[in-house]
Image (cartoon, rainbow, N blue to C red; front, side, top):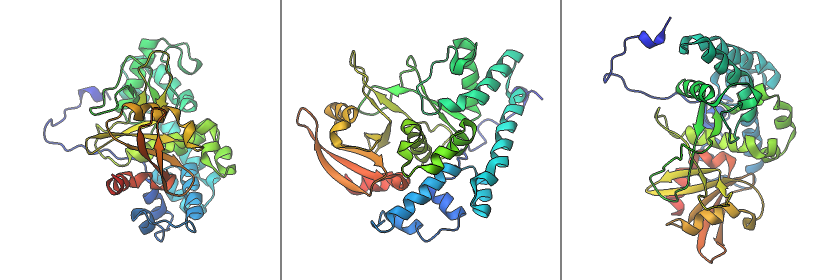
Length: 321
């Protein structure tokens, strides 16, 4: 069947994207409704914090695909979800012919769906992606096709510190996949996620960044919703902030990183030029707020939020701004 020839009623359809389960939805699926009000009210005490961190680690391990959540809730064993992940991965590869117009494009898309998961949260190059022999034009077309199917997003950088976000399509994009649980499974790192106390210690922090991006996307069910990261346009500068989030006319930087405030160099560079004084750090520690100054002396408020609060980021910003 050639889906390009299917008639579609333009202007008579409302579009809404179906995302993987958010952390709150995961908790609900696991039968833990007790903790949800604490999260929604941003009222998690230091006593409850370790339990929610453990729940969030299980969410990262399982991911948010509904079938995977149901299976995990029934067995509380990640090995029992293997068949679900395998079925999803196989069906994605088997469905390629429905969306392609040539055998070459079919092969390139299958190569991405087979090898591309290991490049999650990486800034990628199309030419020879993941060690494949394919050229930039072929790979770009294949990525755009998979992106339209909403299995992944190519997140391009912006060099602006204010709205609107202007992605620089000439730069290399960052690759974010549909679901972190699938990334863990296909990339073979489930054991690593299971065995660590802090998810920021897995895969040089890439899984932590990936799940934060997934939670941010869950805030918006528009098909057109996208994520963005920031990269300095200064010559010779490699400064990069993991995400920038639009909120009430502001572009708020979000870093996924532990450690001392002085080590957040890219965040400081962003805040030097930002027309506001609010920044967010996502980490594994309890909620806190630091009063920080950039090297030039500009003061700003650094809101430190644990991973389980990412879904409440707009509520938190509304309270703190």
